Image (cartoon, rainbow, N blue to C red; front, side, top):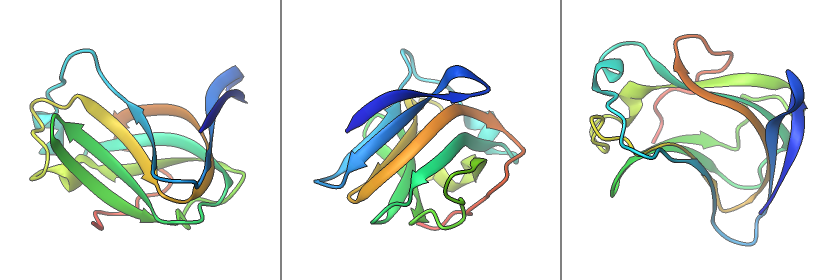
Length: 139
């Protein structure tokens, strides 16, 4: 995997990830201490990722949230709902991850994974209620 800076909002305000498809790969963000998202998971709060697909994936992609060994994931297919070359905010309801993850001890709130090739730029990962694209809870 190759990681470089790219512009979004400000110069070098995002990171571009080039995954060559030679094997399983993950883009993940972890925390220093586990975060309690129990209350947020009971409402309409979503895991938001502002991203741009620079080269469409050649294989299925998943978005996961982890708590130690617990891993809740949502299938994004080949990210067809995100147009290539445009910045969009993807939103997955936290409710989608409940059951497989201890929402009281989330230590890796963002894991984008694929076995195929993919080039994606990520500017922001946050919690919120407004997204451009909401793929639902497909497993």
